[in-house]
Image (cartoon, rainbow, N blue to C red; front, side, top):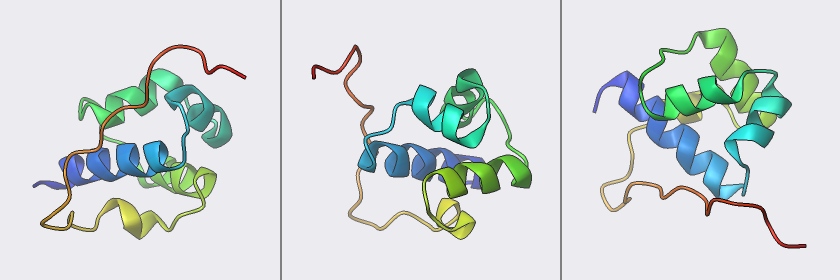
Length: 86
């Protein structure tokens, strides 16, 4: 797994674990929602500054984006789409 794939994997995993939509993460990190999507789809190559902002918004260390996934980990699933009921 290359670096871009690792970042995409962990970004989605961490975001979904926290129950954050791409939109809410983007707002918290002051980046465009489409950019978050592009990172997760591996079409954008984020800078260290962007990764640092995303990590801070999710209260994780930037190094968490680069760790190899555990052998037993499955690919993180996206959150359910649509509005959340209150």
